[in-house]
Image (cartoon, rainbow, N blue to C red; front, side, top):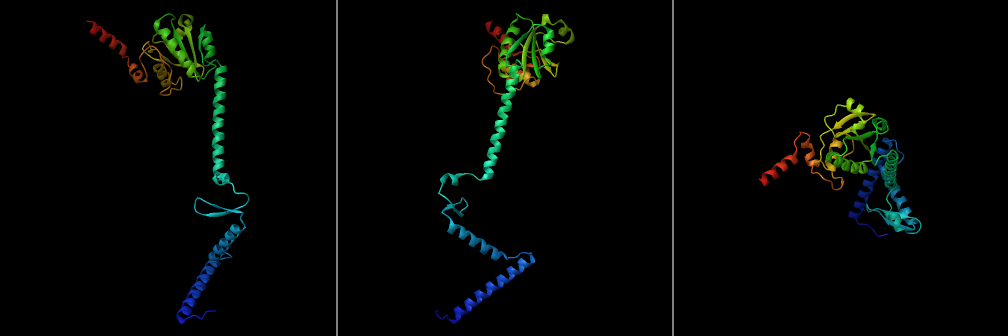
Length: 269
């Protein structure tokens, strides 16, 4: 052994004394905490165990946090990229939830189609209307006088809506075949859209004329709770000029088409 100088001997003695004091304090703390080992001993044991795992590992894997873990078996890149088990479980649960939603939606669609939704049905008698209104959660019935332009245009709009909004049953009835309904329901004018829910007529829309597009009619029915209206739904082209942008103003009785016709008359003069 190499002889130590006086300064080196004093330095070594001081280091040993400091380590001894630290051990005594840590051991005292462990006793106070009712623990069998001190924190220093626990840390040293853990480090030794980690070194032992690394020494016994077949290969080493570096973690994203900079740690190094000993791995067994053949190196596998896919195993390194695999998310934690907790993340796998969350993804599986989300996938199952979405699949259940898709199945429920498909099942509901099948039930609606089986009930006759998706078509614009003609009802021959008012008795048939009273029968149909009890079968469906939401019903829109076009009570009209066949042959008029407003009636024919509304037929076009409701035919398109029936194909898009399967949540609602759409039908129409000749007013002449419904004398009892005309007597029981206080109609503002014809044609009128009767809105049924829970087996009874709960509302009516009687101010929809030839100027309303399919989107405009859908907006009004959605506001009345007769269907699930979504802004931006494409219904295709139709005659008429009232959309969601002007439908609200139409409720006040203002007819923009009349203004345009007046302007045209002025131009002709």
